[in-house]
Length: 162
Image (cartoon, rainbow, N blue to C red):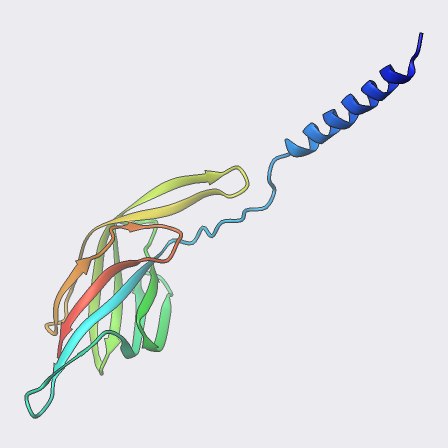
């Protein structure tokens, strides 16, 4: 009886089995961004002394300060401002300093826990239901995309008339 083919088959099965064990190990590294930030954009216009209307879609200089948390974000020449929504409440507020005036931006939202994977665990995403501003220069705050998730997308637009 020739034992050579059975040894080759046994070696092949052992190699295949060890391959299977290696490929079934759980992923220990999370490859996904879990931070969910809301993108706020601007749509504004201003009237010159000559009566001409100038439209613009970026902040020349703006500061957002979180109410109830220590978030302070500042920027110049920005088309979008990434802001976090609080996971412990359903209303997040930001003080907005723009062109020498301070405004309060209110965002009503529902936090929701989203399972990502064994390696990543869970993330807190949000659904925006309403947003408004205390500044009389702000015509409205519109919701572009109510779902705040882990990838960058425009969520709110502040419509301002100066």
